[in-house]
Image (cartoon, rainbow, N blue to C red):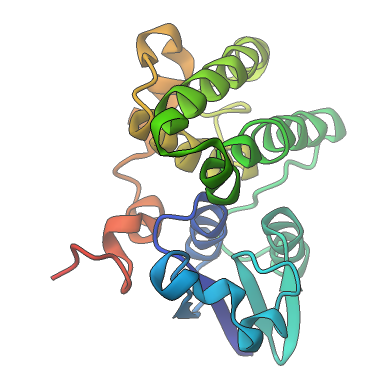
Amino acid sequence: MSLKLYSYWRSTCSWRVRICLELKGLPYEIIPIHLVKDGGEQNKEVYRKINPLGQVPALVFDEKVMTQSMMIMEFLEEKYKNQGVQLLPDDIFEKAKVREICEMIVSGIQPIQNLSVLNKVGEDKKMEWGNYWITVGFKAVETVLGSCAGKYSVGDNITMADTCLIPQMANAVRFNVDMTQFPIISRINTALKDHPAFKMAHPDNQIDCPNKN
């Protein structure tokens, strides 16, 4: 088995996949793709052959290429369901709730403050834009969590919902979102911030982090 992850240290999409890989205890190689330097390495022809959309992450599994973070995590969960942490519950309704929270973040919040969108918004409006849309999205997520959260997002076991929530929480901090509005999200973030898998996957611990010693 060979796993190669094309990743950018601060990309929340890459981050959630790194968390998944760590929770599964799978060995993998990080191949950094710098999204800003020289116009963005994701726009180079060599990377477009791997991911025609020019986004991260991309996972290469035994020479087979997969893109889109949710699909990658679903693949890893199906392939390695009995290894490491089970990220989708067996209960069909709990599983649906996990996927609901994932999609709220992956489809409803994160893309609106993606790098390509922020570049179109303009430098002087980036913070206001990101703050507004994360706040709107987190209000909805907080409401949903009120009906299903236990220790973590869905019950008392770590799930795929948590792998999506924690990176988005970091973006909320980055865009100065007032997190006192979201006590459940904040509590889950506190519960997971020192978990070994979440720490290993954190941007500060990536080989392409500018501040890494």
